Length: 160
Image 1: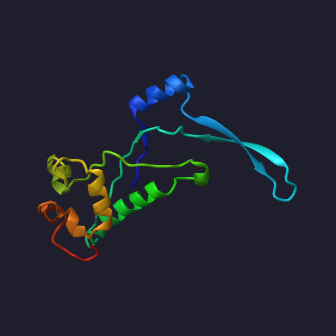
Image 2 (image 1 turned 120 degrees about the vertical axis):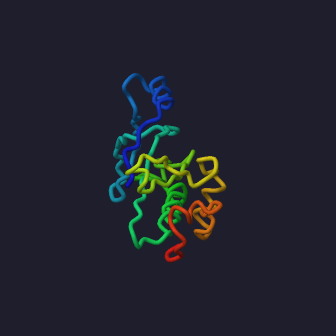
Image 3 (image 1 turned 90 degrees about the vertical axis):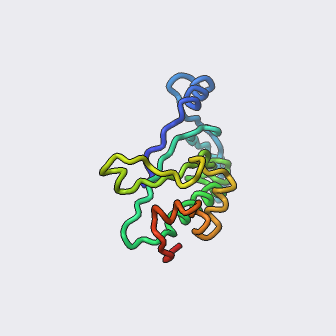
């Protein structure tokens, strides 16, 4: 589940200074050429300004019988998105995405039933850029993190 992405407060303030109060998008006007008539036709596209920062939360549900490969696949997909674009007009520079300050935590049944704290899967609570790269490309054993991954997900090997 990818939840709503909210503009980070510091980015909101920066955008307000540049774009004006209550404006959070920019308009980009460009021409496209009719390939048959060669007629120029202007079009306007509304987009999020470059450098905007959002707080995004993703929830990966793991059900009985699921392999441990889902997290690795999610991280690989996030890396793929960073190398591609989100939405249209990627060849024109729109839709570039970078994930920063990535934090991976486990919320077991005791979190919901007994109020136990969530358990970060990485010692400092956040993944470094190098850890993100390795986690998306190496086998699942990279995510074991001194046994933490196995403790939360079990010792199964299928799918991971």
